[in-house]
Length: 305
Image 1 (tube, one colour):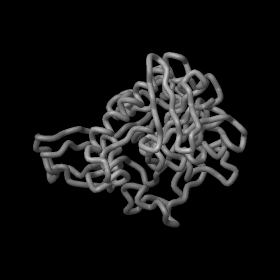
Image 2 (tube, rainbow, N blue to C red; image 1 turned 30 degrees about the vertical axis):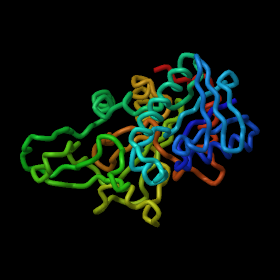
Image 3 (tube, rainbow, N blue to C red; image 1 turned 60 degrees about the vertical axis):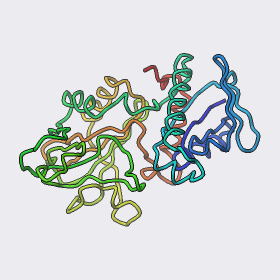
C-alpha cells in the first residue's frame, strides 16, 4: 500500500490520488490539515491511521511512503480550524509528526521522490552549488543593517503566507528603503526578459518558458488564473539538461521545479523547489503526473537523506 501524506489544498495530491485509483494502485491518503477527521495511534515502532470513512492504514502494510506538501503553517490552520484555540501548537505537533514518519520511512527505504522538509535544501545551499553549473545573481539575507541604495528583487527566503493568509510576491525595491525590523532576501536583478521553469522527475528533465516576455511582471505567479499565464516547451539543449541532472545529483534530490530567467547571455538560476507544484504545466493526458507516479513506483526514487 502507498501511504500518501499531504495537505488537502494541493491539486497535485488530488491528481496523484486519481491516477492511483485509475491504475488500481492501493493507497491510503492522510490529509494533515484535516487531522481532526482522522484517528492516529503510534505505539513502539508502528502506527495506525483511520480515515473519516473508517478505512485503516497499518504501518506494517505500507510498502511506499509519499509526503507532498504536508508541512503546515499557522495561518492555514487558523482559517480551517477556528474551533482550535492553539493552532500554532497543533501545527508544531503535526509538523514534528511528519518528520517522525519521514524518518520511519527512510529507515525502511520506503520514502519516495519527496523529502517532506524544505530545510534540507535551503536557498543558501542551492545557490552555492548552483554556481558550479549556472549563472546565479548575487543575493543577500539581512536585517538590522542599513543597506546601500540599490534596486534589487525582494523575495521570500521560504514560501510562507503572511498572518492574514496572503502570499507575498517578489518585487523590485530599493533595498535602502526596506524595514530593517524584518529579515529580507534580496537578489540582484537577473539579466534576461523571460521566465523559464524546469521540471525534474527522477532523472527526466522537462523545460518550459513563459510564452511572453516579462515586461513589467516581476513574479509570474501574479498571472495565475489569467490568459497571460501561458507556458510553452523550451529547447534548452542537452548540455543544459545535463547540468540540471548534475546539480540535482549533487543535492541528492529526486524531484524539483526550477525557476530561471532567460533571454540574456546565460540562463540565470533563481531557485529549485524540492516539492514544487507543476500541474499547470501538464497536458490533458496528465503526462507529467503519470511520470511522477511512475517515479514513485520506481525504487530508484527512494529518498535517503
